[in-house]
Length: 584
Image 1 (cartoon, rainbow, N blue to C red):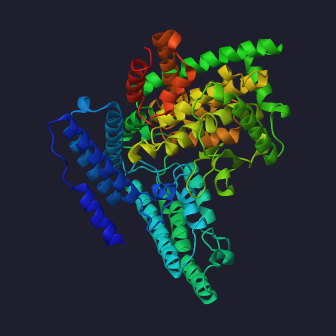
Image 2: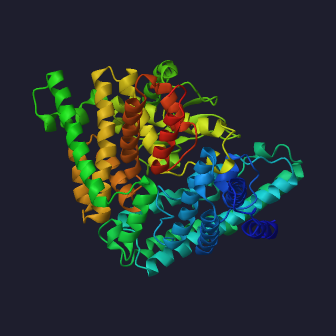
Image 3: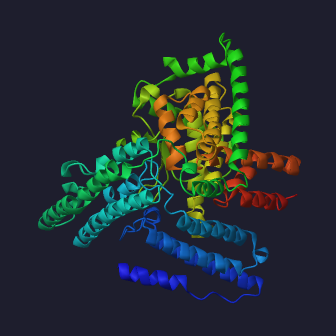
């Protein structure tokens, strides 16, 4: 199977392209490149295979050799795209052209910066996201059992590759601070425990379709593979991280402390925001937005008749028990109440609604300790419901007034609307239909959707309004502390102090968030606010250009109806849609 897959990748990398020289030829060439890129993606990504409901045959480890293979393929795609006159493409193919450019550039860049992109930190480690490969595995024949054992073998190889990666980082003086290594080890320990508690064991009822003798034999083989390869691979990785890896660990955080780290951070700023902005410009935008939101909060404070100053109002919001949950169930109930309220409002703002159902559920326990909030889990063929997985592990530090803003970002009309509608849009070529990799668009739209709650009347309660303002404050403060720690010499303590003074996050949340910005996912958090600001600007421009022809539902259809794209591409796309609007 592996040999056949390698042959397939060689064939799709060098398949001949149609002739050039005409608009029809350029269109045909682009379609061929898009199909070739899609085949490569499907062949190399277990996540995409899960999304498509495919039987996963192998797990490709994140090695430097794999990054080199990806980089060579991406460079070939860019060379082929350069042979196309994009001005002769129809609009939809032009969008595909731009999407392929961005994705292929990412493959080349990821090869260049392979040793900088973290693989073992809590927000980057793949084990939690890979776990459904094993927990949802369906056994219907002895061949399935052999495939499961093969995947366990791949998993052990994946883990060993992470130790090789960590050693390669160490040799290049790209070493995590001890506090982040501690967090990584804590997340890994759940996979290195005793056999009885391993998440990769298989309950007997899952083998009910096998003959009893075959089921017993498979159980013994699984236990042997776990004891012989999987658990020792995790234990060895943890031992390395707790031992030699910590030698010469930096006391500070941020990318600029590493050799070549400033160039890597600039690359990540461009990839995540897709805007032509320097860290210094982004920092200034963040400071401006923080000042604006504090001014609005001060207006709210006076409206409440609160006698203290703004700093005392912050303290009141952060410490009064009326604003916090007592149990995890209480968090879920409040989130679901907003789901129900928002659902009644959306038809007036969106003329296309996703078919996939949606809801909320607690975050898995193995992630709750290392993530501040949670994440949206998109629909798949095996799990057709979109779910916001919220963190229920720390109810007494969960601030309830933010529930409405969070639901509108994570579920409706935010991530679930955009992602489910894109997955359900069969007119999109697969290379765009299943692509959600541009933070500035995806997270920027989700923040735009949360801000839309003001127009929809979702924040009529003063405390719900405060909740949205404080969410806005959090994503705006990220512009300041992310650039501060990674580019401007800020210590983590200074970043924590800034967030403590301007947000209502608890100290444990600020701790995980500052590590996320400085080590796990540098520059990723910049896309939220910068994307939102771009979308709000595009909406204002559409209103001005269309006048009485402007329709908010039509605007939203244009915004999320053609797939994920860079913000520069989106700007051109919206101009095209406005120009071709009926009657204008």
